[in-house]
Amino acid sequence: MYRTHTCGELRISNAGQSVTLAGWVQRVRKMGSLNFIDLRDRYGITQLVADENESKEINDLVSTLGREYVIQATGIVTERQSKNNKIETGEIEIKLTGLKVLNKAVTPPFTIEENTDGGEDIRAQYRYLDLRRAPLKRALELRHRMAHEVRNYLSDIGFMEIETPYLIKSTPEGARDFVVPSRMNPGEFYALPQSPQTFKQLLMVAGYDRYFQIVRCFRDEDLRADRQPEFTQIDCEMSFVEREDVLNTFEGLAKALFKNVLGKEFTEPFPRMPYKDAMEYYGSDKPDIRFGMKMNTITDMVKGRGFAVLDDAEYVGAIVVPGCAGYTRKQLDELTEWVKRPQVGAKGLIYIKYNAEGIKSSIDKFYSADDLKAICEKIGAAEGDLVLVLSGAKRKMQTALGTLRLEMGSRLGLRDNSVYAPLWVYDFPLLEWDDETERFYAMHHPFTAPKPEDLDKFYSNKKEDLEQVNANAYDFVLNGTEVGGGSIRIHDSKVQERMFEVLGFSKEDAEYRFGFIINAFKYGAPPHGGIAFGFDRFCSLFGGQETIRDYIAFPKNNTGRDVMLDAPSRIDVAQMDELFIKSTAPEQE
Image: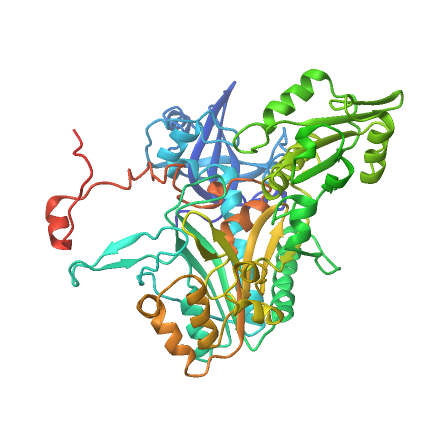
């Protein structure tokens, strides 16, 4: 056999045993007559030692070893004289009695250690080498444990894991589809699924009342730290349920993951927040509630003082930044420039510094000390605090102030990745009006049910009524990141037809795109609802990271390329002819 033990397995209790290990050479060190080898595999690192005074043959072979050589080592487990408490095998070493090179290796382009000297691009190009490093190994181990816990939990409460197709019909509504040409059906295309939404609803019609799948999904959209063109969902659906049933079931799943993966136990129910409150107090539909600093509306308090910036504003909002009244002019100027960035979108920043010696503000030309103190008292500012104010169009400035709140939370160290603050957000608007196309779009997706109490407005033809319809939808938010989203679905074909009508689909278009599900509902669709969690995001948050790339074995870069495979790539003319397609892209030199 190649090995009797792994490189992370041996302890002082194994002292005196003859063992055989196999793995990769991380480094070789010479100290006097002793040669030390750090041998690594997936499970850890074990130190090997060869004594020049005992075996010339072994030491001659050690002298030829390079980094990442694959070797087999036989020896006796002995207690280390100089122990290393940073690794689990740090109390022992292997005194070599045999050594064999299984495969030589060229020198890798970066050091394969905890902290590497390789940049992001070179590590992506050699991802298979980067995956040997301990940080990525820990990330993928965490992902595996979470997937295992998800399957165990859901299986134990009656869910069945069912696979759904990857080659489906394109229904371009929302993100762009990835399309796949069909050789056997010239001029026709499959799409890769953005989610298994319609299939899981059809499974409910089919009577499989508790379904789940850890499933790959595909969206052709611009990328960022927590987004990839292909990603994984924990996709779930249940029949004969109301919103409360779904929330309780999947809050249970989240609590099980916290407990069994992170050792963190939540005994109280997760907090819940209506969408309107989330926007009013946090400027976001995914609030980070690890810290306070809630937004305050002060529009009525600041009107009529001759300061047009506030007099003419639809919305004036403020946050209290604790203990920051000592901010210098330079710091405040930097913050002002920060909020003017396109990503934030404010035109300027107003401040009030509440010091023991008095209140100083950028607007004290228009507002007396008593006026400013009244504002501070209303929003809960105390001596030593800094008040930051934005004004303008309501929705835009709420979002901008929410972004500023997050930035100040980060600067003050209030967004600790080891602290977890889960939250349910519910009662989202069902529809979004787009001025450019002059039509409504589904805020969630076209299969989301309106709240029962809003059905009268849902059947109204007045734009203002339709804008007030709430969706029977909910999001699971963790530390300011949307991790999951779901809803109670439409199960009545008439209601579904009305939804397509509101979204501007003709009957013919709705039938062409979604006729299969409209027809299925006519055969007895049960009331049903579900949720999908972004599994990659869930894993990265559990790992204390903001990027999902380390939790995906072979991710794409921020332009959607796999630089290791050099994909996407062109295909030859013969392949394109076989698929009945032509490229209009410019020729490459």
